[in-house]
Length: 223
Length: 223
Image 1 (cartoon, rainbow over the protein chains, first blue to last red):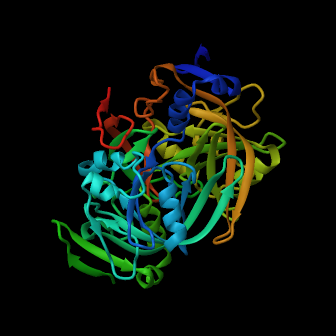
Image 2 (tube, each protein chain N blue to C red; image 1 turned 120 degrees about the vertical axis):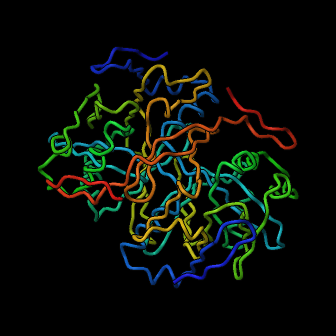
């Protein structure tokens, strides 16, 4: 399908243009395009409706939006398997983000199955609800790095009908030995995994932390 | 600062509420909150202005937005060091995304230094411009997975003045041995690294790919 040529360096580059992408079979294209953005944050989003019926769903579209105020963004397709999460956030304004480690990544992936509304993914996967005072949405007890969001702003992205949900971070829970003196959270030490594509899970190995970059100043490794 | 208690499992959880987060020193909070979202995609964004003056900047806010049409989102602070990227995208509509591997991650980090407009980060870091027919923005020749975006839609996020830039994927270049038969791109094989916080770079190790999840069906590992 795609043009192929020997590149100036030592690997053979395959090229795809718009027509090649459009010609891909639908599931093939979904796998291909989902891989392109690089490694992603895979997290469990916990919610409940007004009656306390809980929901848990894996997302790989969480991203940092700002530190002051402390904000995260999440992309949701309201017509997809994620619709219960979307409806619960609109219903209560409350959601939790729970990092995934090697011990729970299969259960986390299983939450992407299309369960009926009356079946909680907590029960179905054996993950445990944990509650904090004043926060409606359930945390995942097995998760080591978790935080609660309060819904703040949303945008409909007209180009494909997805919704950007923005939330304010109102509570954080994490292992006390993972916070370094400068505020950096060592999520690798906490066992947090990363995701690529739609279904690939990875642990990580730190290369290094690098110093704040300035013009004409050599970088150093932060110990 | 934060309350600390022994959790029901075997690790000690530290808790932070909104007041704790607000009380953090500014740089401490930036490091802390930037770590919370989990592992991120670290990529180099290549642009040029109408006169062909190039710019290269590292971003860790790229995310997948949809496969059909093939879209990516990028968060930009127009008043930050990223302002040249923002202005160039508005100027030409063209930008490239270039994955980072272990061989170039220090050069990639160095692009975050605040260079004057007339100094190209390509020259300053020794990375090489690569051009494709019909695409104004430069690619990074040393990058193994790269693609070009055509600016499509933007949203101002009122809550903190950041901009969500949405682009359509119009060209993809990658090593031919990294695309699996189902369309999944093995970015780990391509050496793509991941980022945590503001300054930490990591390689990855695949745990497994998991099958499409269905209710009441056991997951299997995809070989």
